[in-house]
Image (cartoon, each protein chain N blue to C red):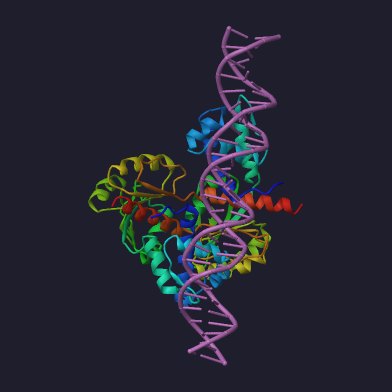
Length: 211
Length: 211
DNA sequence: TCAAATTTGTGAATTATTTGACAATCTGAT
DNA sequence: ATCAGATTGTCAAATAATTCACAAATTTGA
């Protein structure tokens, strides 16, 4: 399999989302041209992107919406179930645990953990919040693939290190720091404040244009 | 001012974060070489990036940490106060409102709004949660620049449209949809499920390498 | 059945981004 | 004051990503 650039990978979920919507609206087929107008990208880019993974379309016809949706889902690994836990059961952790759409896509949030005694024992959609100290054994025994880290950076770094020994394959990291992990372990960062700073950069750029 | 590529802008907040840490540790100066080793990027890229905005360093010396930190902050628009409201006061909205670091960077979360009667009136760090219907007047009268949209896509699209008429300059959009806005209005998307799909893409890629 | 209209997949051209290399300049020790 | 060592800013080269353009294949309607 050829090496797929990160730029392409980042676009796949968006295709997936648009195809899901088309599917929900009962649209059976779509051409790269029509999709490009919907999504505000070039038709050429859509075709190039998809062709990294194989020829899903047909000349003169376009792409079958359902088929392409399923194929992209498979490429994204959504055909398999992914067992995850959330470490840090504050508002952010609970927000993630409550997000119903993850369930729909095969993400099973098996448990939440926290160190805060006020939270431990609290009931959620995903069972009672457990003591953070239990997370290591839990991850080992329950075949957990993904850990969402929704806690401050100091505990996050330390806890992530310990979890590496428990067989965790991937971190979904919301902590305000870069985790250092060995090769083969995946870290996907969601740095909210950095996203907000991009926004304010654009805001101040805007205000200069106006002058 | 020359046009700065998006790739550069996306890296600035990370530089800012590392400089803040250096500063906190009392480090006065840093060379692009040392920073490149810390951050796992090339020194050339750091110098190239910074030079888009001016020459902040000095030959033979490197960069003054404090000065560079302040300069990048200014570039990112963090020298000004930004008044924002959060629309959608569920777990995610509350998580954002409670995140203390935003405050430190000049983001003032002035109010939270929701349509859920169970939430309206609830006390938070940022005052009582208000009725969503009040957000339009509030935004007009209170000089709100940024709206965080932390609600499902259907209401988000409609509410965003109405807010456009109230002088909102930027949306920080957590809803699972692409907002369509006129030129000059900024949308910064945080699509959590898309980030999680990138993660699972990498996971399934990994598992294929192993075979 | 046939021809016009579509539309893909893909090689080539273009554009953008990243890296390499080094002259110019500054630091700091003597 | 001088010089070895360090380090930037920047031009050029290399690499990567995007767009263009079109042959080949398919559909659609007469």
